Image 1 (cartoon, rainbow, N blue to C red):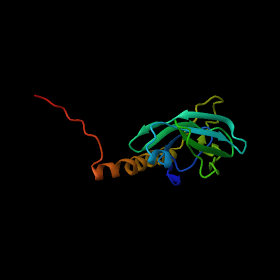
Image 2: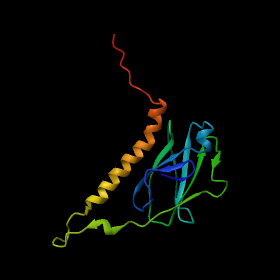
Image 3: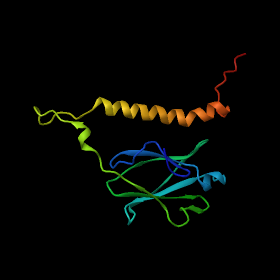
Image 4: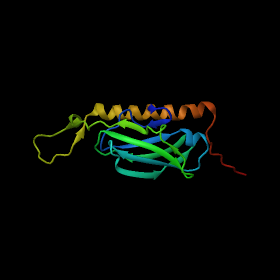
Length: 154
């Protein structure tokens, strides 16, 4: 899902205490940077400030982040030449939603019963993942811009 031009997430909502995969195809990627680092923090004060190196792929630079409980996720990007993409000084700011505890089914008979998710929730996650994979890989397949494994046997 695209929340901002050139920044994609593997989910439709950013929910606290979850891991999210971020894909970046902004200016630094388009200008041919070899390395890009994601600089991120949480809330208006950029709490838990961190920076990690993103992995380069044909589809952009990618990284996974653990979303901490807070109101917003703040991002900016830099390359190894210390050139920044910070949304023209505004930074990239995304809302983080609270974890929905109503999806957890509790067995009232046992105090320490394991949590189970509703089947509809699990299926919706599977469907979202399938749609994400289709959106991600279908353009590559159609354009022929993918690598085939060819076994050269004599």
